[in-house]
Amino acid sequence: MGLFGRKNENATPEAAAPAAVSPDLAALTGDYTIDPVHSALGFSARHAMVTNVKGSFKDFEGTLHLDGADPSRSSASLDVKLDSVDTGAPDRDGHLKSADFFDVENHPLMTFRSTSAEALGGDDYRVRGDLTIHGTTKPLTIDLEFNGSAKDPFGNERVGFEGTAEILRSEWGLTYNAALETGGVLVSDKIKLTLEISAIKNA
Image (cartoon, rainbow, N blue to C red; front, side):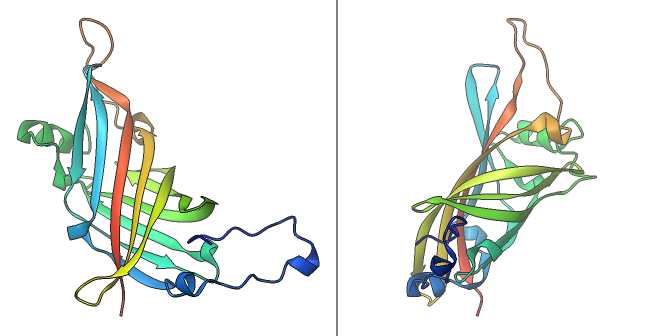
C-alpha cells in the first residue's frame, strides 16, 4: 500500500469496509517541515534551441501533512524566494530577477498549494495544486515518487520524495524572448521542474 491510498469505487457494499492500514504507512501520519538543506528545487530551459540551461532556487520553505489513514487528505505547501535563483551565471540570474522575467521587486515569491493527490501504483503519485508566479495562479500537476522514510542520526523522522513537472512559462505571464537569426527563439516556453524533498516530522 502506498502513501496515497486509492479507494475502489466499484467495490460492493460488503467489500467497502476500510482496509487495514499498514503500520508502516500509519506511522507516517503527521505534519512535516521541509528541510531545505537536504532538499532541492531545480529547473531547466532550452537555450538558443541547442542546449539546456539548468538552475535552482536556494531559498524556500514548506510543509507537508500526511494522513496514513486517509491519504487523500494529505496536503503540501511551498514558498520559494525568487531572488534566490541560481543558474551559475550572475548576469543571467540578474536578468531572471528583472521585470523581463520574475520581477522579484514586485513578485518576490513563487508559491504552490496542493488541492488533491492520487496513487498511480507502487510508489508513484500525482499531486495537483495551484502554482502562483508573477501574480498569476494556474493549476500545476506534479508526478512524485515516494522514496521512503527513515530516522536520521539525530532522531528525526524523515520522509523523502522526488518529483517532476512541466509548465509553459507564458501561461504565468513570463513572455520575454528574443528571435534568433537562424530561426527559433532564445528561451523555450516549456520549463521542466524537478523536486528533491526531504521533510522532517514535527515533534
